[in-house]
Picture 1 (cartoon, helix red, strand yellow):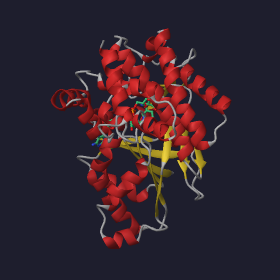
Picture 2 (tube, rainbow, N blue to C red):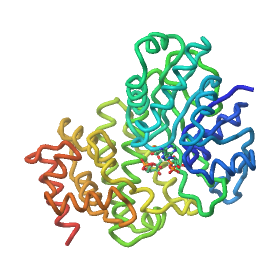
Picture 3 (cartoon, rainbow, N blue to C red):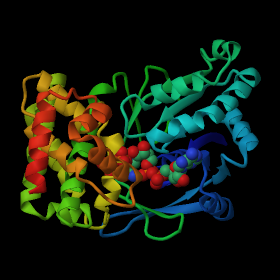
Picture 4 (cartoon, rainbow, N blue to C red):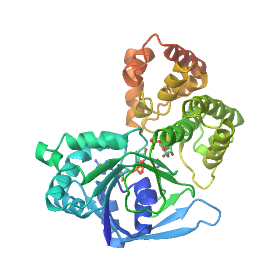
Length: 379
Ligand SMILES: NC(=O)C1=CN([C@@H]2O[C@H](COP(=O)(O)OP(=O)(O)OC[C@H]3O[C@@H](n4cnc5c(N)ncnc54)[C@H](O)[C@@H]3O)[C@@H](O)[C@H]2O)C=CC1
Ligand SMILES: O=P(O)(O)OC[C@H]1O[C@](O)(CO)[C@@H](O)[C@@H]1O
C-alpha cells in the first residue's frame, strides 16, 4: 500500500487532507504532539468524517496510524523514508519546529532510495511550502541538499474547507461538505482524489485567502465585539452582513483588477462563500476563526495585504481598515496572541503595533484610517 505522512492530526489533518489520502488508497501516518489523539488513532485504526448537512452523511476513514514527533522521532524518520507524500496542516507558526525532524527524515531517505517524495504544506499562508522548505534546507548539510533534485519536490498549495473545533474528545470530525485543495506543480504526480493541480497558484490562493479568510475574519472580529458566539449567528445580524459584503467588495475589486477575473463571476463566488459561512450545523466559534490575531495582522495575510494592494491600485480600503481595527480590539483572554497584542497596544500605541506587526509605516493612509475606525468601533 502507498504511504503518506501527515504532520498535524487536528481538524484539517483528520477532516480533510488525511481523509483524502485514505480515500485515495494510501496508508496515512499522522504525526502530532497530542498523545491522546495518537493513542486513539493507533487503538481505533479508523475514524469518521461527518458532513455538516441535514443528512449528516458519514464516511469511515481507514488505514490510519499515529506517531508522536516528540517521543517517536526514529519511527517518524522511518515513515518519511517510505512515503510518497509528506503533508502538513499544523499552523504556519509551527512549521519551523517540525522542520528539523522532517530534514532528518529526508537526509535518511535520499541515501536509501531514488523514489520521489512530494512535500506540501496545507496552511492558510501564501507560500507556506516555500517557508517550510527553507526551514528544512537550513537543517540539511550540503551533500544532502545536492541529492534533493529529482528526489524531493516542494509544492505550494491552497486549502479550503471549514472544519470547526470538535465538540468531544472523539477522533471523529464534523466538516462542511465543500472542499478545495489546489496544488501548484507542473510535474506528473501520483493521483490523490480531490486534489486540483494548477501551474500558477497565486490567483487561487489570493482569491481564497482574501475572500474566505478575509470574510471569515471580519465576521469573527465584529461578532466578538458584538457579543456573538458563532459565525452563523453573527451573520444573522444584517448590519454585520452588510459590512462583510462591503469588505469583500474591496478585496474583490483588487482581485478582479489583479487577475482579470470576471466581476459577476467573482460576485457569485463571494455569495457562495457567504452561504457556506451561514451553515448552522458547523457552530463555528468566532474565537476559533479570530484565533492568532498577530498572525492574521501580518503583512502578507488576509487583512493587511488586500488593504496595501488596494491602496497601491488606487482602490478603496476603508472597510478593510475597519476590519483591521476590529482585529486590534480582539481581546479574547484564552488566545495567547490576542493577549500579547493587547499589551503591545497598551505599551506602545496602535501606530507602533501596526508598524511592528503589519509593517505599515506610521504615517501611512491605512494606519491613519485604522486609528479612525478603531475609535469609532470603541465608541
Ligand atoms: N480548520 C479549518 O477550517 C482550516 C484550517 N486551515 C489551516 O490548517 C492548519 C491547521 O488548522 P486546524 O486543523 O484547524 O488546527 P488544529 O489545531 O485543529 O490542528 C493542529 C494540530 O497540530 C498539532 N500540533 C501543534 N503543534 C505541534 C507540534 N509542535 N508538533 C506536532 N503537532 C503539533 C496539534 O496538536 C493539532 O492536532 C492551519 O494552518 C490552518 O490555518 C486551513 C483551512 C481550513
Ligand atoms: O485557520 P486560521 O488561519 O487561523 O483562520 C481561520 C480560517 O481558516 C479556516 O479555518 C478555513 O480556511 C477558516 O475557518 C477561517 O477563515
